[in-house]
Image (cartoon, rainbow, N blue to C red):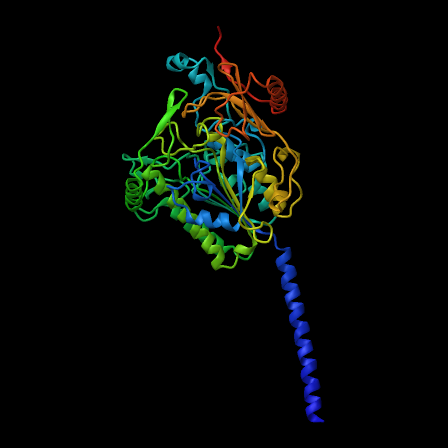
Length: 497
């Protein structure tokens, strides 16, 4: 009898234990399910479409980004809203096209009124650039502000370049912690002040100097990892906009030696061709730039490893992007965007098409690809939806949510636009462009000239079809002109005849 009673009691106890365990697991599962995902947005600076291994580079080595691509989705037709940095960064922060913000050139660009009486400018150009804002207005709702208001911890480590004075820096635009974001467009290297670019001392007013010789991309990863560890108990939004791989061209002696030897082993020589009045690099063989790419990749790897070490990676959305195409036509010509035409500062594909990788466990199937055209304005509504917030309000509807693409579904065809009414230091002219259903129309303002390319069949933009397809050109011109009116776009200024 005692034995039967003991067996009965054991069964009852076991059932109660399982019920309690199941209830606890259910509560945990429900809590995990309800917790919004962490978000990490990684932005490279001046990194070209083919500058990483999963997008075709055989010279630069990026093992951590390759792993990210295997675990997520590659977007092969991802675009920036501008061929230069500040406007693209503004589009990411607000979900608006740069033209709607009046911020269409990099902050710090020459003022048109100062150029009006400049004889060198007038001898070279027939127009003055359009006016452009010197900062992202504080009344714009940034993605950091939207996520902060949704109880996300918000953090930036790296380049901001969206304000010409401290009142417009990240801490006034929704970021609770700012490590390195200020008015600078690139690391300072000045012998007189002792600043050393990518190596400490940095001379950065929002990043304390580390030990002499400390490497900036790894320092930014360190700051990011410290923030992750301190905020692992709540959702966080991390914006990690590296200064890499912008000039000055600097790397460690070890990496320079590695890639110099690799260049010799592969028997590579520096190759160039003409783009406009400039030469443009046509192969990837720059040893210092290669080291810069690898250092950024190493820093990204350290952040991804930290997520895994803290068991946060399964509930973290990671996006990797670049702010414009690779620098190929000036300032050392460090990289090649071939097969794309042009590079940074140009509205050709080389200036606006960039690598994009998205990893989101449980939401995105690993090792997948999307060829749907997407643009930097899409990031704001996509992150907002990922955080389970209401759809972006009307001012942020220049982009669309990409979550359907994450599931392997389609989104509606829509035109993508560019408006760069300026003359870039990289040789690019003032232009507007539209891409729709594989066809791209470019309007060059200085010559009042149009070019038409069938991008799906001519990724290199080598065959101008403007005379062969006049109806197609007319239809795209009408779409572009209607859009420019809705944006209240500013145009280059003609000199008085």
